[in-house]
Image 1 (cartoon, rainbow, N blue to C red):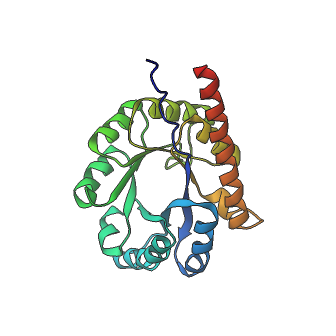
Image 2 (tube, rainbow, N blue to C red):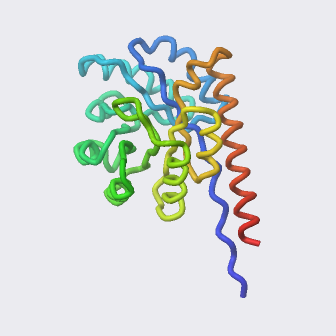
Length: 226
């Protein structure tokens, strides 16, 4: 009896990083339509420096707006303020930060981990219970791997491991490439907010790029399986 082919993987979804937020007022007005228009799965809140109270307050203002629009709100780095702000989780950088964040976030909240320089680091994060691994984001010096290197890492992870993988796309071309390579989510940020046409138009184009990449990966897997 012939074995059934494995079901196709779900289409990758958008993960939107905010601009660095000092005052959330503009985002409060803009986000509901933006999230709904492009099927944004989650929002990564990048916060301007501030004391603990201001961090909690800014996240607390945005959390219901994002959640009521059907997306999850994750705070970038500030995992200690997640519970009190009503956010759904945090994204941290590196194994040490992950280990520090685990007790306060797991099992009830989302813990995503980037800053994974080596394959070993990524495997450690996945085995420890990270809800996703992130590849391709800039380091503290603004440097990041080549797009081809990020694709290789996404393809490797998607082939072998169960936790979702996220590709950080700095261009629309990268968004398409990472969707084709196996990313479960494509993280976009500045390319959306800095687009002269407006965030909604840019996000729609990013969504289309992801769809093209996913379609090409399905076509390739179909040909390979013949």
